[in-house]
Amino acid sequence: MTSGLDGIALQYREVLETVDAWFAHCKVEGGEHIRCDKGCSACCRGLFDITLLDAYLLHLGISQLPQSLRHQVLAKARGRLRQLQQQWPDFTHPYLLNSMPDHVWTEMPEDDETPCPLLGEDGSCLVYAWRPLICRQHGLPNIDLSGTRFSELYCSLNFAGIDPFAMPQIRGEFQHLFEQEMALFGAFTSVLLGAPINEADTFIPTALLIDFSRISSSPKV
Image (tube, rainbow, N blue to C red):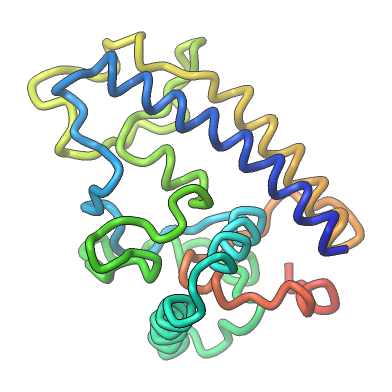
């Protein structure tokens, strides 16, 4: 099963690399109006929800870290989990948000400045090549080539004095991207759980603590 999951995750990473290419294109087109760059960690605070496929990709990433560094990352993740379990005692392995009402976890404090456990001492991502989709999209509005707005959020450090929604040059193939993501997620959950599902999310810190060898026997989705 693991080899099958690895293969799907690597296909997914190839899809994510197209998002990186879009972001790089936007930086060229946006010039000084886009301040996001590798090493900037201003947005890497608080809790971000990611899919189970993103979680598995993170596992592949942290498996390549030196053992001492990996232990430090997991210790931070466990500390974050203990905080969450004080608020949600029933939030147990495999730490999926689907078992909780949406309003419980979607209304997280916006002023949470807790650093992501995957941030290095210099503020760079320790698993940059393996980071989730949301990390690659964050900072710029997600507008499809058709004009459909999938997300109107963007970093307040970007686009000072200009309207990003009036910049067709920063649009991307988001409809196609999300179709690819859903197809791979369906394939991933089919291998992991025996049947495709449409949604299974967790937080980045708790994603690092999932034991995928156990999740198939008690998915809680």
